[in-house]
Length: 402
Ligand SMILES: [Zn+2]
Image (cartoon, rainbow, N blue to C red; front, side, top):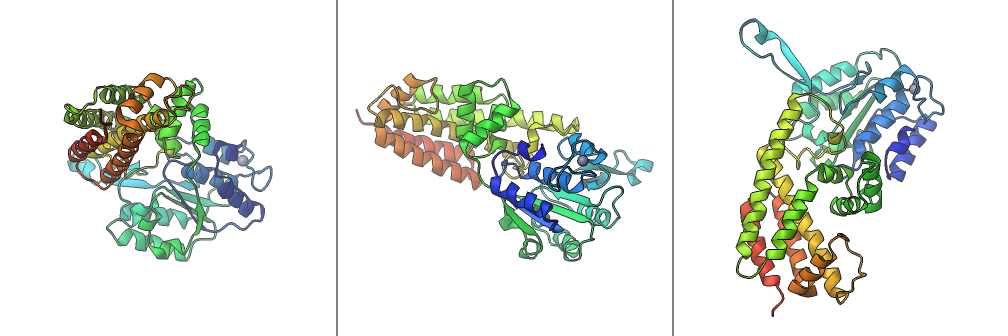
């Protein structure tokens, strides 16, 4: 059942299903909420239910008809459905001469901005009659990209939103709705999606990675900040390596070599960031709408698909890993080194105890504050090497006095 595939989000799902059962479908929706919590999956589920040729109930698609089968065959934003419009990016064909007039098209669901010609294409397609079912739908992920530093695309789209064709179903998603024009928001129904609990994130991880170790599920869920997309990023193979590096760094941390820790942290973020950037470029050129990218609609952070964006991405994950370590250190120190204290990394009780002893409860709290501020600075595009050095200094100041 399509709705069961979306974890948590009961109020949003309830609202959408009610609009289907009461036949009060609006033309436009904005699915708003943090990145990686299921907005995009919900958008496709909703569209599938609205477009099914033979629904079991008004809110329950049959899963068997041609339309449902097209939805089932979707890969990322690539879908064969003739009435689901994909956001395409147009570029000049490769090579000069004759081919220069030919336009290449590709699905542009991850581009940093949505260009005028892409949105014009969508609007034009929406005005055509449905080929088979009752509706024609478009799903625009991270729709604030329409309004980023440009007026024409948003204005072109606004015209269609003002007088939408009767058959249209327009679903915008956004993790930064403040970046959307008020005039766009006022013409769509906003559906709010929430940060998931770490139990829900863990549930999502187990569904995707059936064989995942319980410890890894717990750790990734704790690190993911309510986002399945982020958790999937973390278990994508790198979490263990990064965690080992962070733990080793903190084990060696002392008042003399603290700067080395900062330098090593940033160095690893740089190397790993470049590696992931290269891997991502390769994956892009293979043009497979891979499933892992499905939930991570973090276009800005993960990111702008630049090497710098990927470095920042790794760096913030490593800061989060440090945070997990200090949370365990704090629990350990505050519970008088009680061996039954609930840890986020239950497989490393000795490390938690040692860190707790090295920094003390107060020092761990100071370290946690410093880490949160470092993460904020990283989000504000402060240079990573500067953040890492300042962080190392603050961690030294947080060391317990002997
Ligand atoms: Zn169906």
